[in-house]
Image: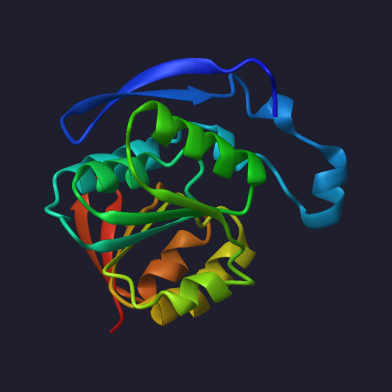
Length: 192
């Protein structure tokens, strides 16, 4: 990860939270990592979907609920859920994302767990299932992601809240669920 980070203040669940983040995700692109696993640093962006989902989550009563975020990246929805009283596990497949989210939670005095987890190796997530609530923001940017999530989400239990800005694989993915709009491109998913 880059040495230089920028600090940004966002409002989550009625509280100001300061986040450190890379100034440019493009600067983090590693050709070797891409060649090996098509890895791109999506986690390093403050995506509008993450902000939208965090706003919805911040309005929920989550005290004592076990919450899982998939593909957390900078983790705004996880931070909002923790501020709302949830027991949160935020996950990402990028080690730098996990480290930075841990640091941002620590800096803001927000208690949550952050772990490195891949969707094609979800053992840790399944051991702790069922989850009360599963969160995801802008996860359907690649076909393989949509396919893995179609298999994984039903195994996790609980309610699913997904923020989806209209990625190419989203329409077919959402058609597999009973999707209820909760906000601008934020959906509650239930199996039919």
